[in-house]
Image (cartoon, rainbow, N blue to C red; front, side):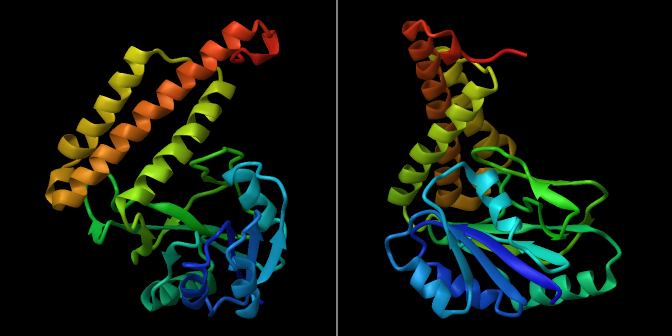
Length: 261
């Protein structure tokens, strides 16, 4: 076997079949599931995936490293349940690992937001390291926005990975709440602080950077939606961070205050 695909899931029954179909050419599919109740596990197993279930949620980075620990092939492809590998990307990946000129490869990601693929606002090309030789890379231990750490240079593929995210704005709002909470917790653990004023400034800057400076306006109404989402997510992250700091001070517990250094 040459390559395994790894992914983490929770309640991805609406995505998992199409996701696995797009990587059916891989020698093995490894999934770490954290408590799905919608049939995700059953669907994945019926399609031949090896599914490992956990009762705890340590964060995106640690969970992906757990999936990585199950790999026995030479190469790894990491994707999310809402991503799809096109036949063109498949061919490029297989050619790259056959050549073996690098230990890791990054690829552009093209994301869809509420019915439109977004090409501006900092969303594209959005290069991500997703193919790497087993043992030559790992994920950071971040709660959210984890990255792949490699010990050497990363080569670049041309064909984009398709990302089918945010079908409607209700989903956007749920993600804003989820990711801003995780982002605040991660920042708190790293000793960061915030105030209501700084939260407002971060939110405003995130909106302007996406909409104006990174030309999100070229993506029309969906581009405005992305800019608003980025602004809100940043604002709520720092408001939640400020609240965590306030709670730590009021508790009087030294162990609850943000670490320094």
